[in-house]
Image 1 (cartoon, rainbow, N blue to C red):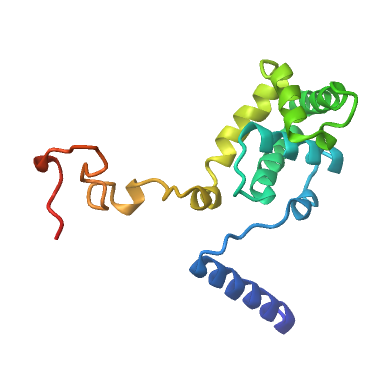
Image 2: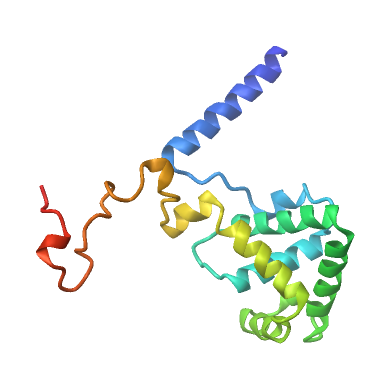
Length: 179
């Protein structure tokens, strides 16, 4: 490895480690992630991004988290011609429902369009992919306040989840005494 490559790699490692240590999410903007797309074009990716934001809306989650779902769909489309056709046809469909491109519609209009197609295979494909990939993303977990799976951290029992103080009138025997 040349000195220049070593310095560049080292700087990236240090920046990444610092971001992880400080809890700063390592997310790029949605447009940065479009450069890696193999099957979808920018318009299709932008449309799917808007669609994923409407299916599972979270105001405090950045577009970059939703863009990861689009990347998963793109990867799937790259390996499956059926998925590529389903996405292409579905995007064309939602672009023409209201006579304007889906991504240019207001949020309320986008929801109306999605309700019209929610039982179809295109919506179901995007919905299922988003459900699986979006809510499996540890960066999304952090934003939503989910600590992640308990098993690698020793389970819930000894991490403050062994009491029932969150109930309106818990029996004294149900919660350990505070120390």
